[in-house]
Length: 170
Image 1: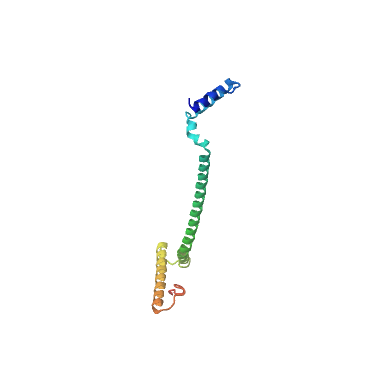
Image 2: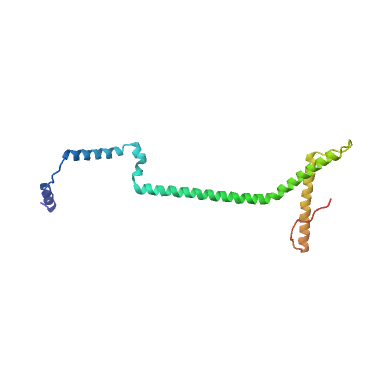
């Protein structure tokens, strides 16, 4: 006989006395039944990972990271849209004002024509034609200013304020 067999035989001989054997047997059987049922339940299959502590904590940390990344991304997008709007406002303000000036001039001319000149032999001008005339005038003004700036540039004069005070006199 080996040494291990000898130790096992001695331990069998000194078997501890167990009180309430039925209670312990029932408890062990209940635990094995619960463990065997865990694998069969679809609820346990879907949410079984929730019992693993390190996995639960790492998924919670990942979800916090994703939310923070989303908030940061939204902040960046809103900031860029704001700066883009500012640039568009700065660029288009002059064009909008020019168009508004054209509308004011056309409307003022139309009212002046209808109020002051009520002659039977006068020529009536359509508002569309008058807007076209004012628009052409503005384009001519821009080209004239660009031509003046080009002449100054070729002469070697500094362009301090290009396009200012160079208006065609009508």
